[in-house]
Image 1 (tube, rainbow, N blue to C red):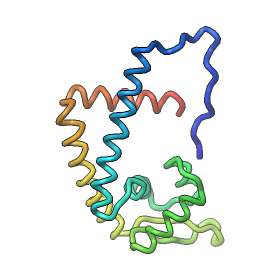
Image 2 (image 1 turned 90 degrees about the horizontal axis):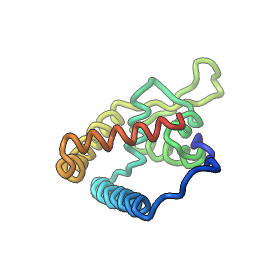
Image 3 (image 1 turned 30 degrees about the vertical axis):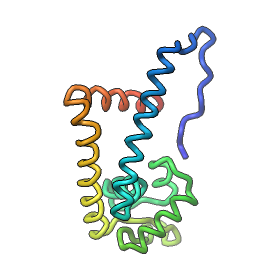
Length: 156
């Protein structure tokens, strides 16, 4: 995985205040509650958030190597291989030979996979609309999304 190494705090970095820790805990708790709702809704349809993430990434290019795909979605290679095997079984993904090295196997999303991605995305969008956008409003939704983009960009 390509997650960043933890950075030790600078010697003069102040500790979080009790209020900051409480806010952080609220953020984390809200995130877990939202993910529980997403997982429940996806599970009722036979999907996982991992299915969504892998198919989203595969839809961005013609093909990916397993290691590159695993790094892109922050997953171990062996876990990715198992997930890809499952998506192959459902017809959402196929293995293809590399044009550069016939021994190297790549994966590609299928038309079935694109249809699955569209269905999962519609369900995900409904959950996000109901549990995030409708709660926060346009401004709050934009603020939190831009904040997370900034956080992610801090180690890209």
